[in-house]
Amino acid sequence: ETVKPSNFLRQIIEHDLEKGTYTTRRWAGTPGDAAHHAQGEPDPAKIRTRFPPEPNGYLHVGHAKSICINFGLARDYGGICHLRFDDTNPEKEDTEYVNSIIDAVKWLGFDWNGAPDAAPYQASDYFDFMYRAAEYLIEAGHAYVDEQTVEQIRINRGDFSKPGVDSPFRSRTPAENLAKFREMRDGQHEDGSMVLRAKIDMASPNINMRDPAIYRIRRATHHNTGDTWCIYPMYTYAHPIEDALEQITHSLCTLEFEDQRPFYDWLLERLTEGGLLASPPPRQYEFARLNLTYVITSKRKLAQLVYDHKVSGWDDPRMPTIVGLRRRGYTPASIQTFAERIGVTKSDSWIDYSTLEGCLREDLELKAHRGMAVLNPVKLVLTNWDDVMGAGHLEPCSLPALPHPPEGVESPVRHFTIGKEVWIEREDFEEVPPKGYKRLFPGNKVRLKGGYVIECTGCTKDANGVITEVLATVVPDTKSGTPGADSVKVKAAITWVGVADGVNAEVRMYDRLFLDAHPDAGGKDFIESLNPNSLKVVTAIVEPSLANAKPDDKFQFERHGYFVADRVDHAAGKPVFNLAVGLKDSWGK
Ligand code: ATP
Ligand code: MG
Ligand code: MG
Image (cartoon, rainbow, N blue to C red; front, side, top):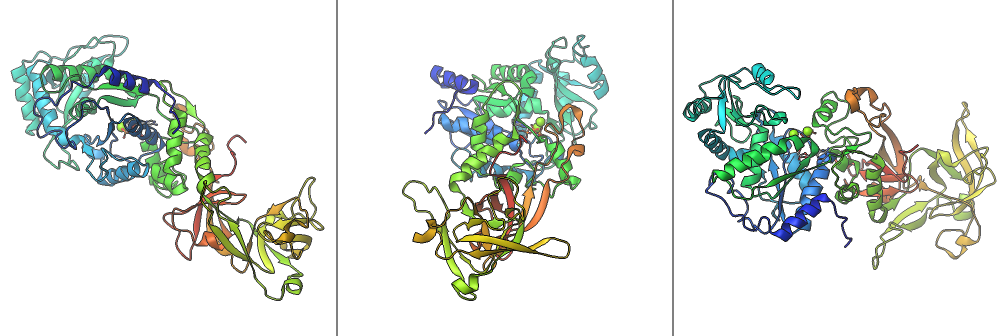
């Protein structure tokens, strides 16, 4: 077990656990219809965090950071993290997104309350309670129905330079407000004709405290509650209540919500005073969102890439979505390591994309089976093969799949054959070698990795001067793993695949999706910096062990990088691999 470095969130949690901040909290009142969906009685001695996505798109690498923080802290401190759908906005939400989010969280290695098959929480389950809480606020003089137009409300709210102006409806009595609010609920008013606002402070320097809207009229079918409601709570009102009902202790969000914290506290204080919620209420803490170079982390912009067919879908391996990363070959462990490595801070910064790649390389280095693949093949003919080895002879060869197997584990063995003809990389032959070149050129000897030492004798070309075959002779008795293997010294070993048992494979060579390190910074049009060469498809030739891969299997193609058998398109008899990450960091160049 490595000791996890501390951060400000860990310090806050440790402080609260030590002080027993939440040990006296008990379920308040009888929300009954509201949060009793909770799995078992809450243990007041434990921390509770939550990950609250809006089901309006696929999760991306930024969400992965938030998931790892919230679920990770709960795990590390013996607490619980809730997966909660913040589904208070009926128009944009969809069950397709709900399911993809559940899959993403599970795939990253987390479950909720140790019960991965239990239904996650959903904000829409609390609509009844939220409505009752709104009536309470009205009765206590903390909320009023405003019939100003949206435009009037906006103008009268003012800005940083001047205080706001009270709405003419601000002084209505609680009885009048209650009657109006019930009319809103009962569908007696048009969409947008009035809103319920919290009555706080129209002169507050924080604009969010200038009587924010908490309920609006919206005739829309909700994916969970159908047509039960024609009024919906605003996010800023709903979110603190969701947290409180679920007895969240530490509500962790990104920095853009900092200005909302005073309202979060104001609302929970009022509802606690009114006996509707347990005390002490949850507290909100903000951390910096993830900004990753060459990557966009906005659901709306990612959606644009999908709908404009700039990528093949949400799970295109170039997408920073969790489904995209997964299809690209990322592992849950690599993403968790990444989240830990970048840490938690309170100031925004850019993380270099190479940090994410480094985490994947580290994870696959020890786990991924090795295999040989020739990505840019040219045929090598061993002209003396039939004479010294026998006509048509195929010599069985083998190599370990794992060069560094874990302690006490024996590496699986890969089997392949060598014959008169093998495929090699075009780049591994030079007719006139540049200075320092150690691979094949006339007169030079190299080892075919796991096979024999060979000596290059020349090449054949077509009418255009393009090399069609590289020619060499095999040096007998130099097979790897035999006593004669070291009898001839060579300066290089090259990778190869036998013509007899090599299998054609589609290999998708991915590069960064954007050429600009900050594709959408400062209002730039990110479409303009799309990399026209972010995908190149090649027909490679792979050794038999790779051709037998199952979808999602990851490999190191020796000398080339880490590749994954595509989860969608790879099939027996039709291998398809995606480049996950190269062997070395190429982002700095
Ligand atoms: P987007 O802006 O991409 O639409 P969002 O913030 O609206 O994302 P939500 O579904 O509301 O998406 O987010 C769920 C949680 O994920 C929130 O707590 C949010 O703060 C967090 N989150 C979103 N983007 C990032 C990011 N880039 N880094 C860290 N956390 C993030
Ligand atoms: Mg959102
Ligand atoms: Mg957002």
